[in-house]
Length: 423
Image (tube, rainbow, N blue to C red; front, side, top):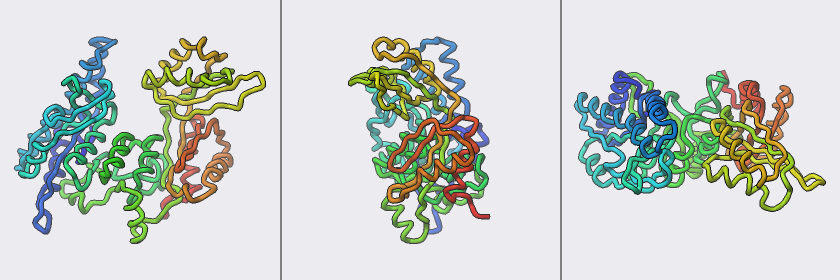
């Protein structure tokens, strides 16, 4: 079980979480109790508060010391949840990242989980004790606390589930499942019973905020069944075994659900949007081998993720324009690095635009059906929405549009693909 920051925001909400955990660990109607491990995030807003402390202490901070500070938020909530469970008569103890240990590799503040040594924790769980694990943190090769980056608690939860051989990993959030699109934009958005790993990976990568991309990729690799459901339920709510959220499953399990009539196979599963993108255009780049490498190598070395890449056909003068997107937060850094390499790259000028949005249509049904992209382009065209760039994968079509037209585009496409709920 994993609970995010909004679920852990204060002692009252932590008590509600403790009741949900206790209900899950209690014996069911057949007299069988669940063995439970819980991963928790810091209280909502706490990590930002700790990051600001680091910036005030030293604007150019040491990433290792930064990790020591920001990891403390999850340590607090893991201890508080353990104490609250004990007050409810439930045996529980916290297991910090360095106590299991959860070993990580990679840079501080962006570490990746390598292994989890969990035999002691498993023995504790088998003895009827609820294990409470702070998400987001682990132990580096140098023996120091390391953090996993934003949303890292989801990844921690999947890794713990894999390490203990859990039947399922329940991700409790402030929504009760995965929807066809953001219900705040489209009132007729529908909750999905199940989504494949591949679809969820695409949805997470293109703006759906329900799950962190790395956690879905790890779940797919380790075969961990995920369920997304809400922690904002009453104290008398039934356990997650009987409370359906949205299951994230393999293609094989999805086929079984379709065959049993429990799911309909949709051409398009969902519409996602992301306003945190920025567009960069380099004009008159030399059209020769190595030119594009000179653009993207320094960005890769700086750990700046590049998404859409479009290179125009070379002009008669042996020049071309290269367009790509980066996270909005990295735009200034990317621009500075490219300007610094201007002589090496040989471009004429750099044009940036941070007022854009990426709209994506996702669905495994695209693999075997034509016309998905043309439906998207026609629907946007009919409403006068201009497309600035296009990228595709086997189960996704993404376009860049003006940021001001985001909500309209999402509503138009949701209707165009027949995703609106029927009254």
